Structure formats: C-alpha cells, structure tokens
Length: 92
Image (tube, rainbow, N blue to C red; front, top):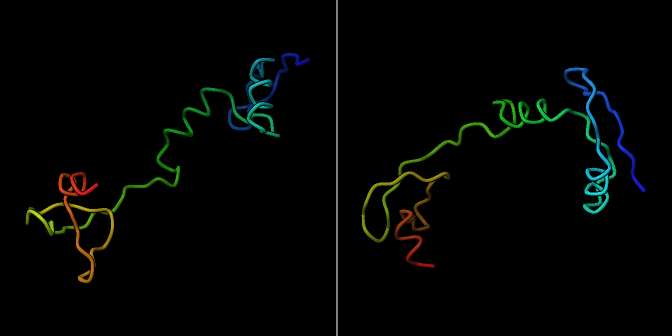
C-alpha cells in the first residue's frame, strides 16, 4: 500500500527516505503532513535552545508543613500554602 519516498529536508536540503513503515505509522496516528526534516535536523531542532522551552524561573518559598525553604516554578501568593516536594508528595 505504501512505498518508500525520497523527501528533501527543509533545513539542510539533503534527501532522506520516508519509508513505507513510517508512512503507515503516520497514517495510524492521523498525521496528514509528511515530515519536513531529516532525522539529524529533527534531533538538532529538538535539542536546540530556541525550542520555546527556555529556562524556568524559580521562586523562593517556605514550605507550609515543614518550614523548609524550597524553590517553586510559580510566584507564591500569601493566600495559598506552598509545599516542598516531599510534603507535596505526602499530601497526595
């Protein structure tokens, strides 16, 4: 049903194979577009710093249960308790 296709990477311009099994996988997942990048460019793009996953800002807080200082990925508010990772896990 599917045949191997040769595609051109939009980043580096090299040719790469879009195999029949990859096409079948894309179809099973409901993907309608063919891949635009070769495997090495996909990996480089995923690992690059420009992937909108920048460093998270961490805020200092004091755990409401044990009183230990900790860092949290959100701005603590005075009207809500903040828990360290250990106390948070114990409350679940």
